Length: 130
Image (cartoon, rainbow, N blue to C red; front, side, top):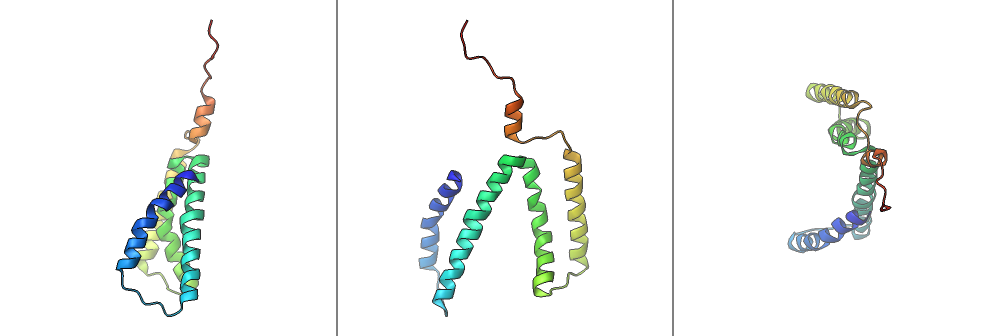
């Protein structure tokens, strides 16, 4: 959570400068403020915190597979929500992406463990002096 907070604070100045230098037209200010607040909370805080918690729980290698499903989920959600039917290229990409994720999970198997579990398996050195 702390590293996520540092990232958010570091982004405030460039985001403010970009906002001031970009020509904008807002037709519904209350709705715009509400949407930006939702995006900031949902994307910046909740998603990044969950991502970091997943890395801590499952390890970076396992969580990196999530980036492989993002395009697939976007295609499926656009079909479900907006009615955009996937063309042949999208379907082929979904199949290849699913196969890659399956192989990645299967190849990793039980041999990889999260960092915390690795550290807990190491024998502890005695701190007492003889």
